[in-house]
Image (cartoon, rainbow, N blue to C red; front, side):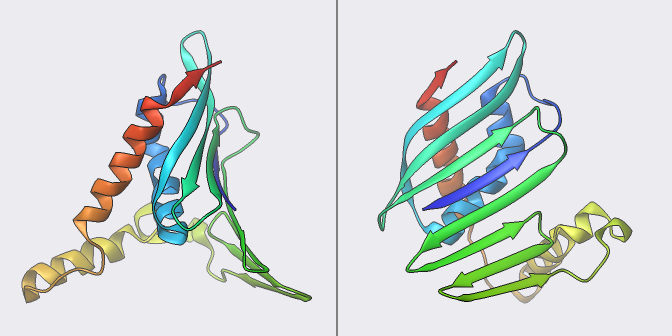
Length: 168
């Protein structure tokens, strides 16, 4: 079982498709990275007049279990959390700064030591490293660590979520 949550204090996109493609797509990437492929079972979106307030999608994972991608656009503050359970272990990632691993009676916590407020968003979230890696691969004529086909697969899952939507 896996839960990928992304919450914001207010809506920036009026429609589910825009939210999924611009902001929530990163959680869908993370679901695929940690859990493998899957098929979208359902998506529920909640609107109030002219804006999206939140959404939840359930994905049946190819190796068993379910993954959920949830976003609330009326949260108290910006927040991202990933929780994965399986094989008698749990992993909890809190807003890119705290990792908790639980294996039986062992509970290990690691916290990021740098002050992210001192870093630009591009640096703190790894975009600079990704861009530089890609440019280095172009220069060296080598393959990057990630494949463009992964982006296609994530986009296909986004399209499945949009196609499966029920509005409340």
